[in-house]
Image (cartoon, rainbow, N blue to C red; front, side):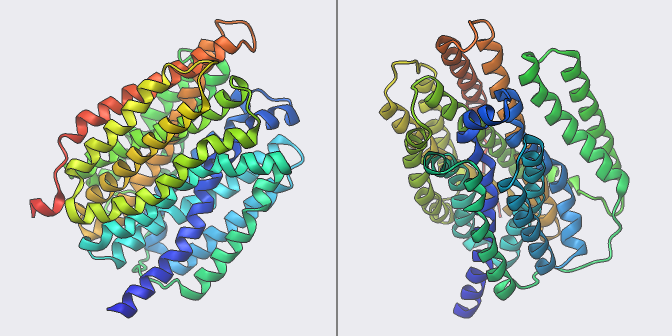
Length: 462
């Protein structure tokens, strides 16, 4: 048993390194938005596409992960994901113009789109249900800590070097992950000759892509009601409806939607999506506020966000062990209350707010998130039968990335709409824009809190 346990740890270690860099890259550039805007002569609504485009690519490609895990071996998929990640990192690091940097981000995202659902599926396959909490706690450390620490490391790098080095410093870790994976990763999935449904892939691409793109351009247009926004979102919704109807009728669907028949999975999924929207929108808003309102240098703005990320890393592991002992019923509501309270305080920030208050609220919020995300996610996946693991993780990862992209876009749009009513570059406009965007996160977090009261421990249901 100890040999098997050690083997599990070695297999997962390679995944954790790769996933950490993939998720770190989601938010690392947020701290560089101001510098990137100056370098490339673009405003925030354009620069934010470096994050939105990354998440959009994940949203488009992750739905195909269930098919990929049936068609290819674990080692093949792991290797492919690292090759894409390394290539994208090198392209981004050496980008001379904005369009090349965006292409590099998209190539990076292709690698992340493979590694994230693959890692979760492997954990479900190699760990028994009573040990998944601790294992998913390690994933929680990566999923939450990596995006949280991204702006901090980026701030330090930008202060000493340039934004290019955010990528150059990531490359060695990806190479190490590839080497560790080639040595330790084993094939744990069953390969089948399933047919790839091109129409399903096109529909999911149009669906998720249309919705995310529609929300994303709202930031540049300064309104959610522009005809372009409405048309893109409507096209996306219609494509997803057709996609869903097609999956239900297919013998071998690209994405098995039977996962939505399991109530704890659905509740856990919705709560997870709210957390992702809150995390990523906050990771965009706070760096802008700290640099443009409090006038902190990137390195100091990054340090303000550091304590929350570090403490959250430890709490994710603790939360995993607590989940194995107590389940999600008490953890998730308490965690959401710890998210809501800081958001209420942050709604009142202005040009005179102390950075220490931001640090304190950021710490409390991320401790709360660590008590919410992993328990809600693991409890939901535990309810699924073994044959739906790949589909459950694919759906969860797809919607998680899409919701993150939408949350980021909505936050930037609300900020842009509010700021537009003030003089260009007005501190007061930025402050009220950030406040209104935080209100959005507060509202959806309250909705998640209400849902959390309906959570039941899957193991107790028997």
